[in-house]
Image 1 (cartoon, rainbow, N blue to C red):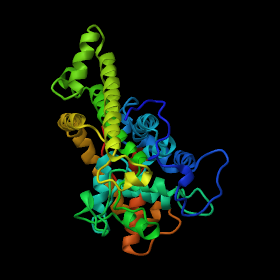
Image 2: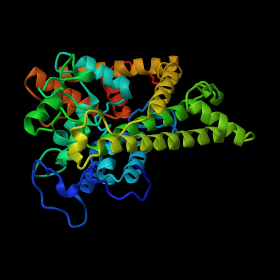
Image 3: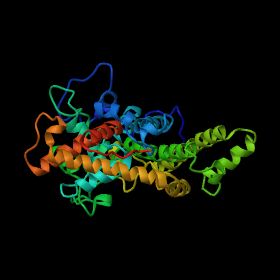
Image 4: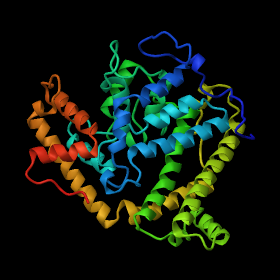
Length: 398
């Protein structure tokens, strides 16, 4: 299957004219498709704005040039739009899912999520993907007629299942949720509006998921080099990235390191996008789908890296793990960040009025979920200031 920026709409793309609709019916817009409206609602949400001050890897106040959760999200969106356009998919739905995929993240990145999951271990745990779904269905309060954003079925499906099916056909949790069961937000959504957790999501959702991987690989390398955690030449043994570095170094021997790094990152993103287009085209040709439901019912995802690019993705993440994700200073800061989250959880559980909620839940499970929602919505700065308000000593995350 040949692909280009001029690819017409694929018959297996999600079609807003054939959407399964919204849980609360609304009149159509004369100016925007339903998927475009989904995208716009996400952009205007409170949770989206908060991403500006949430950690990606480096705590946001460490430097203005490091990625935040918001700039990461925008980079994922840019890649997703490019892939969707070239594959003939619905660009608006792909963008909506890219923009919403991290709405449920806590302050302090994955460290905050680990801490909140620990605090919630007796109350159903905490999962940022499930929290994203909870935000767009319950926690955003912008509309008079309903809680949440009242997104289309296809948008909710993509938020829930962009990484693949959550259950088997009998409803039993699979994959990462097999041992602990579905997070509460997923289970509640299944009771309210079935998103068919046993199937794959649309091709647009799969595009958003793989765009997340591409963005992570590229910008984490870029941020780690900017932070001085390794030199560009250290990439030489790494599949794909090392080959690109060698080529760029030959083409631009006199270029300063910052320009060389920029050129390597640019070419890495382009190479991974091209690989996804070629591999996905091969998979589409083999499956010969005629509808978006054919994509959902397929035995495997349709939007994938080739085996060679999957190995490169694995090697890049393996390269970054000791040098960035588990680097001594980063680990110390993230350990301190987990302390802040755990302390805040205990405080609000004991003093729920300090959350300034309209009404605190009266049962233990409900209150714990309310506390988790409150903390998960915090920015890094808000969490630090809250900790300083209630505790005599607050870790200095530097």
